[in-house]
Amino acid sequence: MSYLKGLATGIGSLPLTDAQIAVDLILRYVPAAPFWPQLPKCNVREGMLAQFSENLPGLKFDAGDLHFIAGDKEKELELFYDRFIAQDLEYFKISPDFARGLHAFYERLNSMDLSGVEFIKCQVTGPFTFCSGITDVEGKIILHDEVLMQAMVKGLGMKALWQLEYFKKFGKKMIMFFDEPYLTGVGSAYTPVNRNEVIDVYSELTDTLKSQGSLIGIHCCGNTDWSMLTDTVGIDIINFDAFNFQERFVLYADNLNRFLKKGGIICWGIVPTQEFNTDQSPELLVQKIKFGLGLLVKKGIDRQLLLERLLISPACGLGTLDAQKAEGILSLLNQTSLFIRKNL
Image (tube, rainbow, N blue to C red; front, top):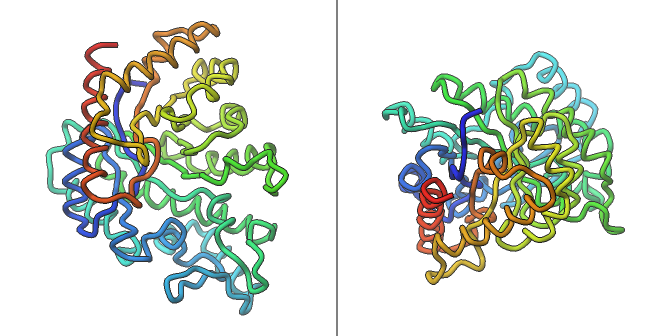
């Protein structure tokens, strides 16, 4: 593992409609760990759920929305599992119609000097968030359907695996994030998911992806039971909203200490998104990180280890913001990364 100390990456979504401009911004502001841009304002197919829905069983994209259509459920599942068992990555590809930014990013990497790139970061919507956002013919979320949920876990894993294979030619270390805002509800009486289910699902997913040598991360932009992620074998990176939830995150210091000692990385989502304004500075954000580091050091975590395993990112995706604000956030991210690397 290289010495990270403040290396910056992004979450995924940008509020742009031109894929080339989006790639320009990413390579300008996060050149060492660039990511492919998700562009929901460009096309409704690039929304958080629709983007990863191609060829998953029973899912139909219609009139800007994604639904499970009953049809011949058994036949759909049989076709899906035939392709899954065959490890047919081409069947699970993410096409340009659903991810213009992904393919523009690939073409740019294919034509540029990559000597300054340390990591290539990809992403997919996590299965709990994905299945909680899709309803069946009776209006129930498919998260409640054990058979469909298991198929979607496998399908989304194949979407991730396809990306890793697609970008493999560039010879860079890969990072794969699963975006899971739904996990903020785990433990609530209103959320039909428990800690053990999360551990089981991500143990399966990481086992599938580890053969590619990728680092596997989970992005959750709210507070959750972070121990279920630190305790899942195969998760390498935990990305949290450090601007809003730092004080709650550090309550899991013992779990985080074990996570770091076994090679884990913490990605601090320190640059605010909704709360961003031009008065914020690298110095103020780094002061906030230093405060969080200090709390963890007091709880027994080695400071040097924290710095060695410290990535930074925006607190959340930028797809719902305006373009000027999004660029301001990426610029502040870049400045903060440089400040950390020079001063911490």
